[in-house]
Image (cartoon, rainbow, N blue to C red; front, side, top):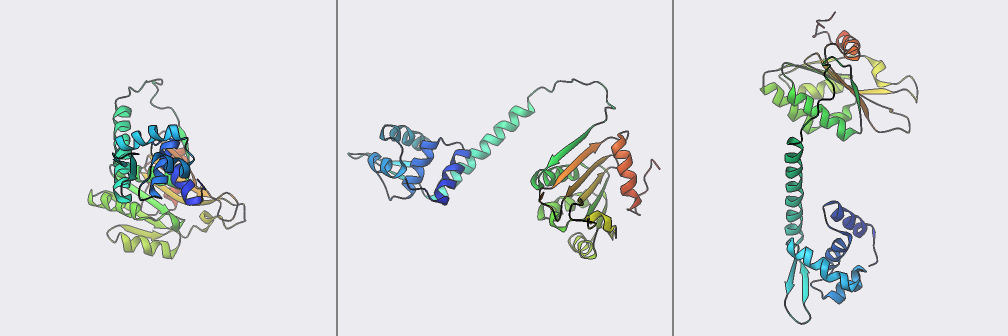
Length: 269
């Protein structure tokens, strides 16, 4: 099979979704044909002919291929919409199964000291956004979010904050710039919004200066601070995450944060 980029990517994605390489190659080959024999599939897919039969049997068992019982037998792939729905459901089922297993995995308590000081790091926008949404979802009383990089604003973030509003939590939103503050106020008109004016957060001092992307303070004891290099080679967002009223990092950064958030009075001050 002469593989162009879409074909190569499709085979790779099918493998990510649980198919073996030969199965993925045969399925892609059948998508290029109205129907095909094992010989024709072999010629297009470069899968050894003796292995085509095994791959087709697996694809048939998963509902991805139909068989015409002629001589020789002919095969055809199901429609694209049907195939993607089958794979989507299979993937969702695997995630549900994994979630069940993880929930039933017994957590070993290796540390009895509840006052252990911990700071964790996260890398990548998707991982940091996921943790941000989780923290907002689990907030019990108060959320303070300072947005420096407007690129972190997403529908998922607005939806999570709106759910927090609906739960009647105390919410304070800050934008580093006037436009960011206006966006927050427009999307969440029932929350308190202010413009911070703290220009040092943007890292404009130099090309290598790190910039803050977001600061999230939950219930005054859980803190997440994201950062990135706006003009440097490093483009991936990174973050530190710390929790606990007695955590030294949380105490220090909470005071720095609340110094710039006039609506919040840090109880530790």
